[in-house]
Amino acid sequence: NWMGSQYYDPEAMYRAAMDFYARGFDKDGDYLAIGAKNCGHIGATMLLYTRNKAAGNTGEAKSLLESALASNLPQAKFELANAYDKGELGFQQDRDRAFEWYYQAAKDKVPEAMSSIAYYFVRGFNGVQDDRAAVYWYHQAAMLGHPESMTAYGWMVMNGKGAQKNIDEAKFY
Image: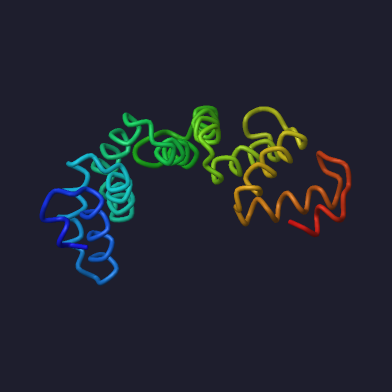
C-alpha cells in the first residue's frame, strides 16, 4: 500500500495509513492519513476525526468534522448529530439539533442515523412519542443490515407496537 502513497495517490495513502495503524505505527499512519486528507480523500478526514476525538483532541476533531461537513459527507452529519446528542466536542447538548442532523444523515442512508431517529421517536426526545414512525425508521435501518435496528424492529412487530403484530416478520428480523 505504501508504494502508491509515494506518488500522491489519496486512496493508496489512505489504505497505507490504515495498514500502519493496524500494525501499531501510529506516527506513520498519521503522516499518510494527513497526506491523503490533503489530497482530498474524505475517508481520511473522517479517520483523522475519529482518532483525534478518541485521543481527546477536541479542537482538531471539531475542525476535521467541519471539513467533512463542508464536503457533505453523510457520516460527518451523523457524527455532528452525536456531538449534539451527547454534548461533545464543545457543543451543548441539544436534542432538537441532534434530531435535525440525524435526519439529514438518515436521508443519506446512514443506518445508525435511522436507528437514532427511531429511538428518538420511541422515547419522545424530539417532542413526539410515535411508535409508527419508530417502526418505519427501525425497518429502514434493518433493511440496510443494522443489527440493533433488526432487533428493535423485530421486537416492535412481534409485540404490535407501531405496526400490526406479525410473528413471521418478527422471526425474520
